[in-house]
Image 1 (cartoon, rainbow over the protein chains, first blue to last red):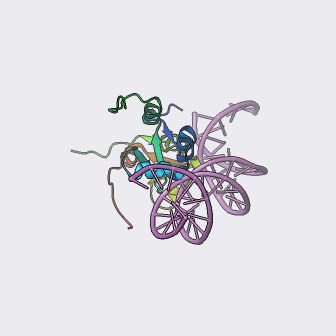
Image 2: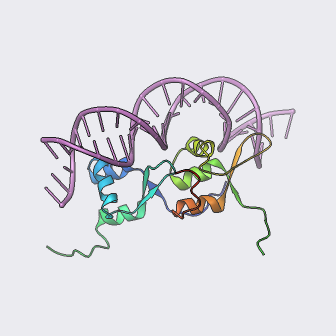
Length: 66
Length: 66
DNA sequence: AGGTATTCGGGTAATTGGGGTT
DNA sequence: CGTGTCCCAATTACCCGAATAC
């Protein structure tokens, strides 16, 4: 079936589980612009897996020490 | 220019993968008129690839109802 | 002529969004 | 200021059997 190339997306609950927080908190992060959110046609949010992993690993962060 | 060439079509599962939703959800979007659906002779739905990509990128396509 | 995966339908749980509060 | 919780309405996910696609 050859699916087109695109970004892997995560559901709010999946992101919440990774960060050990409530799904509502993930929604607040999206509202605050701290996390890129893609909306379904019904209004639900989906999050980029690569971005979430980077934030989890603390890769591209301009907050070095302290 | 702009000759009405044959548009590339996607299956329900392909669209569902792009949005990280269930194929049934894509069917609901088609029923709700949020997504253009083309029917096979057997009744199965196919979706326009360009339309799906625009919706994924958040490009404002048209606002029939608001 | 078969065989497997997908997509019809409907129906019922689970998740999510939004506002407001602690 | 950030987070967790409560409410309700809307959206989405999983269940089945039967038909279609390849």
